Length: 111
Length: 115
Image (cartoon, rainbow over all chains, first blue to last red; front, side, top):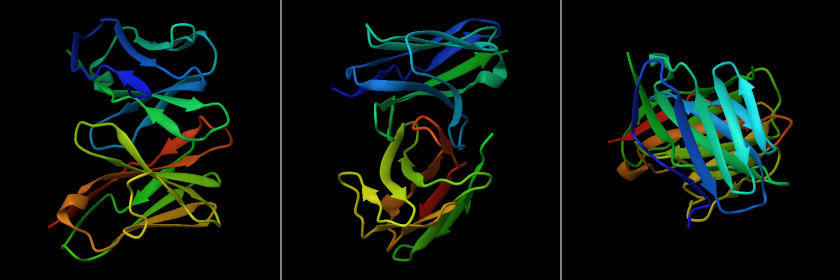
């Protein structure tokens, strides 16, 4: 079983839709939870990070963590064609530096 | 935000030659840098962790004699692919760690093609 599971998609939505991206994990020792966005042939870009259960909002993006269920989500409101990219969740264990990545979900927002 | 650069952005080399890729943190000092490899439509695979002034720590299955990593300063790490073969063709991405474990800033990547 992988440390971090993420549905690879692909996911296509119309412009303006709400997008829900999800990851599950098996190790309760994960302490930090990140979402990265990666455009084609580019390096990942950090979108959001959180370390506690609950919601964290930043503009159109909301990161949600449920430690009891070992489930994290990224919501994108009013999705735009420029949001079309691969979204990767990444988790960090307490006291460690390495990122454990999900496989990434490829999102396409159709104008 | 923190900026990490990589050079070159793409390189084509002949089988048997060596290629050096540079990773620089432009506006912050990074004691730890990471090197990843990414295959098409796949996630990032951690190759090694590079700490300034010490030997890199390689992940299982990564040949340290083939992928030489040097982290000579707080702003520069290099990855040298020695005696490259076509199967080494890939997208190589570095990241630099900020002050906190979750602060990893990624470079734009280097596409290596070995002919």
